[in-house]
Image 1: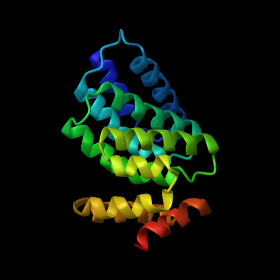
Image 2: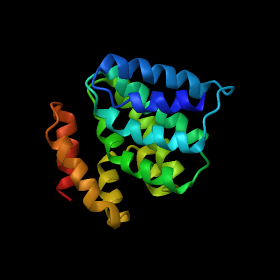
Image 3: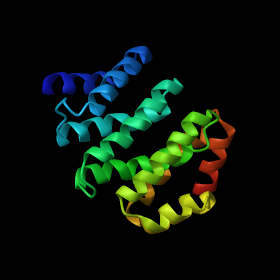
Image 4: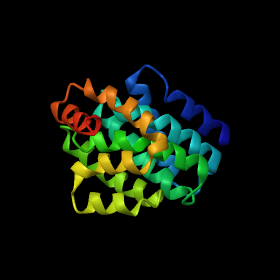
Length: 177
């Protein structure tokens, strides 16, 4: 079963969007089924594979990848170092996708971003999200994580070129600070 899980995780890099969507569906079912063994190392491998899928052209792929990140965070103990790094890398993409034109993607991103900030014990960011002071989220993230600021700004460049105006505007607000 472990080999199957690893093989499915590798398929997430496939160019065929339908194959990726079906693979995410299978992984989702496996992760939610407590009888199927899913190791922490595989959970980390899966989490790393999910981040690029947030920007997939298919909203179904976006939704499943965002929901799977939620499930992975629930599976792994809070504060486990390798997953923390992966979750940190997901913060801004999730933030930008809160502005997605697809309301389902936007809401899933918001829920997952709140869970990610709780997972990372970033209580001030949780509070900003819960009080809907979204405009301050990026600013506080950059101030709080100065070591990661360059990486966050590199991520923002991709969203400056988004076809969605709302995501471009969110990226502009963050890069302007």
